[in-house]
Length: 374
Length: 48
Image (tube, rainbow over all chains, first blue to last red; front, side, top):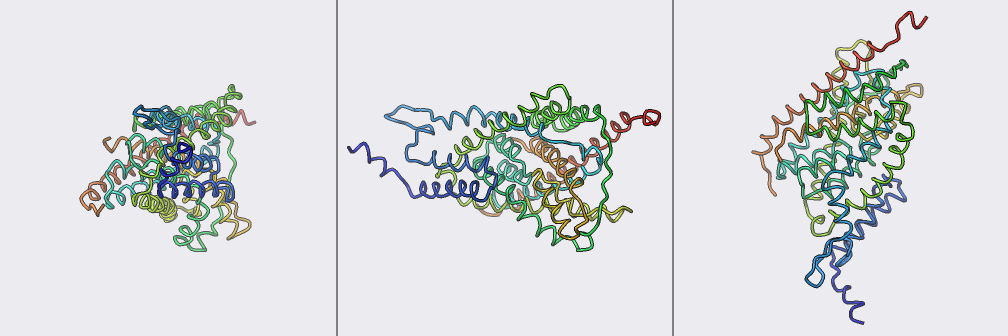
């Protein structure tokens, strides 16, 4: 009889707090539709790994070590960076780079919007984080879950759980975080700037060569980014080659869904109470917000600077789409444009900048891996 | 966990190198796209 209830006495208040956090993540996923594909498995996983003596994580029972399935999945899929890379194949297959290929200068905004990453690297260092942890935290600003996981894992950061929660939470909060920053940095006159869109036909050859060229250019400058950019562009090549329709569909749907399903619950391995409930977690959430704000500001300010030299002015709001949260950021800017002027359609420009943010965030991640020693 | 001004100062050159690196790579990619678009654009005679 005692065996039935004795584990109740192993429950700690920290575990109860983690159950509540898990419940909040599930609530946000189900009721608020915030990144449900990731937050729901993470929320459930958080509860799973914080049950006393949970068999889902590695435990010592009767002096013998028993490997938990969540730890097994973590070692098999995240510790070796496999899951985020496989997910990138799916993401690459989902992205149409057409708007970017029509107007390649939009890529500059993607580059400018990575400022928040490097600014946050400095701020996290100032607040006492080790350089490798600061680099991992900074990548939250990329608004790119797989890159965040890849970089944090590469640096063996102790804060992987908090970093992933922050990265995906802020991605879901793009409609709340970006508009006030954009409004603060732009005048009404600037927000009213119209940008006519010229549909240009892009040859199939260009679409096929683009992922290969991007991989080669990025890989030569930042060799450690080759897995990230390579798998992203591999997915895109499958999409654009025109002879692998079935594989493209599988990558976009089955592969991406399967990996996302496992990724969420596996990440929970790093959400055990003793490592998650620390003051550093709160600091990471705060620094992640700083990264997002300064990424947005970087893109908007860069557009304003470009406008000083251009005859055909750019609506500076599109600069904010240079983050990797695709297509949410593009939609937010399009809606903001319509709110100012019902005839101002910024969607295609915003999407062009948004997909360039996807590439730029991977380049930023790769550069960080190259610039900072493990 | 206090303020670490020394490490902060060490990261400033990284910020410069990182942003410079992103813009250089981006510029090369933009030039590549422009070249690809030009090389693969249908010729005027094709359009007619």
